[in-house]
Length: 423
Image 1 (cartoon, helix red, strand yellow):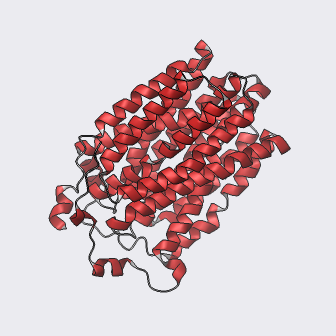
Image 2 (cartoon, one colour):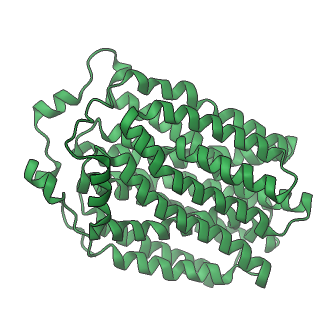
């Protein structure tokens, strides 16, 4: 597969524009520092939700639930997060990210505390499903990427997105073992409360953006409604969203059901926890690398390669004998491909439509991701309860990976005519 160089003229920004984007004053108000703060927020919020699969078995066993009960609650979380993301993005695009991040983190932490107190499926769906879904939309890496995207020229944007998404993965690597340690030491209920307290650290971190000028580039003659209509009528945007649906299906299914899948095979639950952690560790490399490569090569071809590679990795995991070693190798390989789609997908959104309404438009693409996540999580629980096996869901993941690789190929990787004429 050959990767086509992107048009250099699209990645060039005049020295005057770059200078205008640099904020005067203290160094902590400079874009590179804000990328670091955005990365810390991403680390905490994504890391906190990465370990939910660790709670599937203990909560289900404690209350005598089938796995579909827990899976449905997490599926609801994913769909609420997806539905809320465009709304949160629109509010952040209009008023700045700070207010949304603060409210989102409070709701997120409240959901975790109430999840610890849930004793019925309805309570679990309300807390783990609805509240954490709403909180996840408000305290989201998508919002901080949009805020940072408005501060940086196109040539630097892809790498910055890669750094933020790599921080997501580092959060997964750090917080999944931490969550497992909390469960072993204090029980699953106290573990959830402790994780909720960590999420509240987002509040002081988000205040950094209040002192930035991330909203000063918000001037545009295009309205929000016009931006949404333009994107939804654009064939490449629709294809991008369809591909991101597959990403959500893969990530959510594996993240929630892999620990139980491993335990069902008689392998230590610690292997499942470390597998999810390894996904996060290796995705630090994968996400950062995709951000760097996305600034140099065609983003759509890189996405096609990633989805096809996922299909191959999952297929091999199913064919080869299942063991602790094969699981850890699988997790490491999937980690390289895990969220490496995000810098490229968000970068294409910003390239095609500009950064002004990136929070909203990426939110719409992310909604498609979360629809896939809903299906992957729920289907995993439903199919297992029905057949006692995850095999159908694993092989569906392979087919969807091939599908996603194909549909990214015809995407037109250039700004819309409106931007091309004004540029």
